Amino acid sequence: MKTKNNIPEFKNEVEEHEFWQQNDTADFIDWKQAKKVRFPNLKPSTKTISLRLPESILDELKILAHKNDVPYQSLIKIFLKERIDKELGNA
Image (cartoon, rainbow, N blue to C red; front, side, top):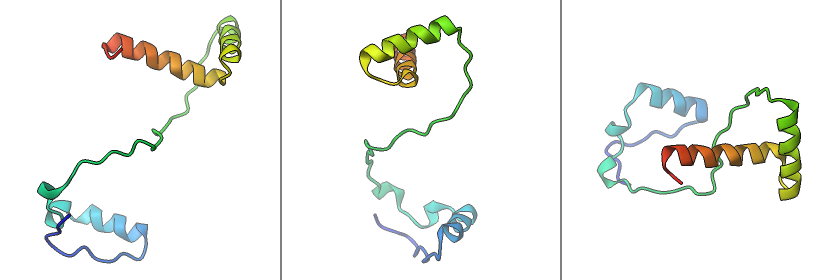
């Protein structure tokens, strides 16, 4: 990608972060020349939540997870994703 102005060398990430907080990338990068790329192996960021479930539901989830040989937390994520996709019409 072609640059308009020279991007300085940075000693560390903190210095680079401070620079980009003060400067606009449009002054340094010709975004018209940019190409879209994909990073398929990146894991999405996650956030820990607290979820209270009746013990009977949790027990059933654990049984299903054991049958499918996956951790029950992973099974919950799978179920949630499937239902979200269905509700949003993505399924």
